[in-house]
Image (cartoon, rainbow, N blue to C red; front, side, top):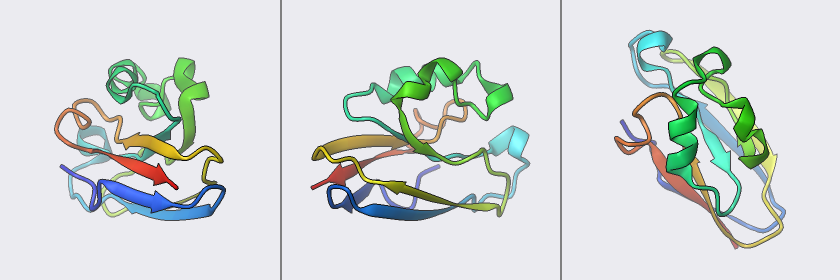
Length: 115
């Protein structure tokens, strides 16, 4: 369980478009995937830990909303979603992850590098 890339490089303020596809075949309830891009400095593991209790909201905890730059919904097998957002104006590394339980811990994570 990994994203096809663990590093995305963008320019400050750039409009970014990512097409995210769940390539799996298991039902969404058993093996759904999402893509969440967090603000700089947010602890991705703490976010993933909080997400475990947020099944009703696609594993996106309401109390963490201020830490999110952009996210997809939870996708089932062969589903896709296009994510469009403006890159932050502050250079640095912004973590991204899948917040479905245990997916972060098994390697579904990466970083958006804003230059």
